[in-house]
Image (cartoon, helix red, strand yellow):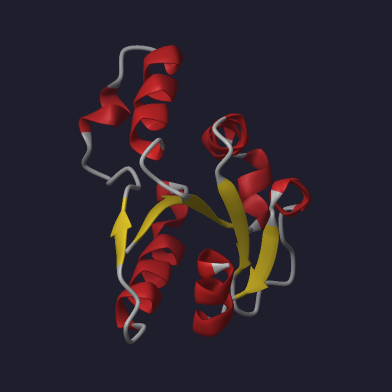
Length: 129
C-alpha cells in the first residue's frame, strides 16, 4: 500500500481525475490518496497560513508526492507551496508529464526526484523505487 499525495489545480481537475483513474486501473497497485478533495473544507480555511497547515497535515501521511508537470503548475501559488512542503518534509516528488503535453513546468521538473511520462508503468515504477 502506497500513501500518495497528488498535487493538482482544481482549475485543471480533468488531469487529476485522469491520473486517479490510471492508478485505480493498474493491476495489483494499491494506494491511499491523501490529496485534498475538491469539496474538502480545507478550501475554506480562514487564511493562507491555515490552508498551508491543513495541506501539511494532509501531506504528512504520504510517502510520495505526485505533481502533474503542466505549465500551469509554474504559476500556481499552492502547487509551489506543496512542493516546498514536500521538500521540507523529505517526501519524494515525482513530476508527471501529461501525455501529449508540449510545454511543462520547469519549476516542477527542477524540484522533482523523478520525472516520468504519462505511462502507468513509469509512474508506478517511480513510486515503488
